[in-house]
Length: 561
Image (cartoon, rainbow, N blue to C red):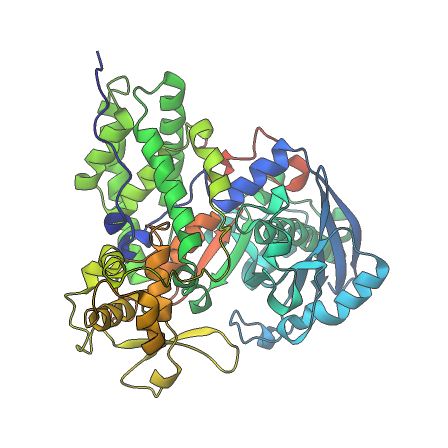
């Protein structure tokens, strides 16, 4: 008989917010792609393709409309004839195979004409508050050619080739939240369907996937005529949308401490609630074991040529062998089985394995987990006011809570301050340079919160603890951003990375992985320590087959009978 619950608490920020662990996060029930598709299915959204004006050269436009209970949103897609020599995944590219915008409502002919003049130009064009996102994509040329050629010949493409790449097109940017004239998030977050983070961007990518499938089928038909095969649905479903993400995304998690806290807090709270489950039902155990087996298969197909990621994948494969053996021996009727499993994992699995397990134990408990998606948005003002009346002694305590780990680091050592974040003049994109090799220090951005916190703490220690911090900031305004972050930490304990973001061995891909895992990305494939390729919506149902029955577990590939 169970008389009392063990002392199970949320994992502390000191454990969760290390870059090595953040760089090991996996998608879960709270990932934004899954949040989107659950809503679309539950509310019975309807999808249509009112226009598909693509010519025999693959040039033209198409419109895909999603209609919900109250509003419609339309992806306006422009297809281009891009010479091979102009195809580039770099953000400085000026031409792409396809460009897109997500339109608020259904566009008129006048809207299409206006968008035709601007969307293909991307940054060089301008869009209006009627547009919610701006994006572009390039073909995965070899796979595209293989699929188009096979269908034109009346055959299905090779599934091994499909699985090796995973996508026919990859986006190089999906901009939203006011960029280049698009609607600000503040004007949209009152809409229930867009309240959760990045729902505009996820919807844009989801509809882009439908367009890409239609486009490759169209081009195959141009080549093959009446004998062209239609891509088998089971093969099409394996295709996602690729994405190339670089340094531009890395500082996001530093610049948005409250928002990032809300993501991590929701996930950690979900993990806690499941660990507090006293006994697992047979149904819950069956769901967990099923997702574990399907995850094992997914990981077996995960490849990368990046040395660090190859080692992590190998470690994860070993972890899954140990975990599967442990699960077979586990008595899920014993008290707090999920807590027992998580506790075991801390001393037997790598960070990759621990975080995959953390995601998997959430799968059987939608009622506990899914409502937490409503807490992941940031509803605080964009720039929080500093509490100037706070005594300096209290500010010091806040700095110690979030940054005490950094107080003993030697910040004069070249190792600890080797890098500097700045914004490139050419594209206004974040970059990471070598402080002692490039003349970039005058342009450094405040994306080294640990170093800045130590500097602020040292300056504050020269002042009386009872003095109001406003008086200090009048003399030292250079520390305003640090004091604001320290005060935000009271409501955002998971808002600060507990590692040095300018050290010689910092890996920006860890920050990219953390953010992309909340998008719902899988099969991370770093191409350096500064950019990564991923796949989105691979395995997801297409709009015409989306239902509550298939809206959620698609992220785990089906096993062969």
